[in-house]
Image 1 (tube, rainbow, N blue to C red):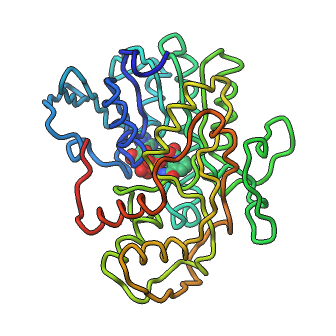
Image 2: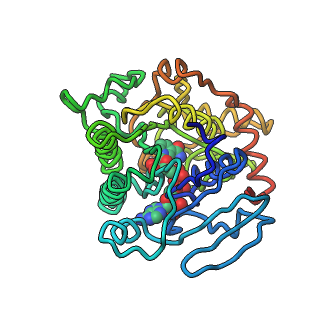
Length: 351
Ligand SMILES: NC(=O)c1ccc[n+]([C@@H]2O[C@H](COP(=O)([O-])OP(=O)(O)OC[C@H]3O[C@@H](n4cnc5c(N)ncnc54)[C@H](O)[C@@H]3O)[C@@H](O)[C@H]2O)c1
């Protein structure tokens, strides 16, 4: 069943974060009511981005309504929320859900992933409690999406001397495993492993996505694209870059990323993970140069060699996602122009 015709609400954990806000926005446009569980660790309170809705506080919930659509916000830590559910001491009576998108996660840019790996490992606990809850409530859930990441791929395939377009079959749970990217990558790998069990052992419809570098207008400036945009907006010269700037990533605009998530959930049900990437490897220096071209100036680039940089080159083999009928609609130039305009105007993201 697709979202368009299913009128049971959708649950989005981490729905106040960057990906979550865009996902909720698109779900609303498709006519879905949505429940959000988020502890606002990095997420934005819905009061900031749900405008023009009737707002009513009801115990531990805030309900926002407009045109027959209801958004229910539960401000809670996913750890407490799912543990209370599992221990049969729920604080809130949940409805049956059509789709459940599990996004809640400690993510962050390189500074957090490299700088506080044990805090990031909280994700292991969030994901395991989530899947215990989901499998115990499988009769009340039609489909589950687990947001994995390209960070789950073995890092030895992303080095200067060995750069491989990362295809799905480079992660094989029945075979030897390569080392993923820090505890963040481990949590995504183990989350995918649980997703497979939920599908195969418990008979649930589950899909995983492995987004590469999602970017967009309202992304936190601890991520490279909005950080670079804010400095380009001030026409900084020289422009600083972490490391040599020759590290490469596969950049996908968030709007394209969300469309891919919908397609994957419609077409994948066995818990397997699908890349969301364009297949194009672009360095941070190229991102700076593209921004500078849009802004029509020519800054010099100053390297900050003491900063964390992560792997040298990470890009998708996009054949699988292309074969499912997705292709990116937003060119890099258009996407970066949007981010730059947003940085200049300091607009507020609204649903
Ligand atoms: N943005 C990308 O390019 C990208 C790439 C690959 C994977 N992902 C995955 O997509 C998901 C969303 O990422 P994002 O970029 O929107 O990050 P984000 O930090 O903006 O969003 C994460 C959300 O989870 C919430 N959260 C964190 N810990 C929580 C907890 N214990 N309980 C409840 N809520 C909690 C945060 O408050 C935030 O709203 C994550 O699972 C991430 O791993 C994102």
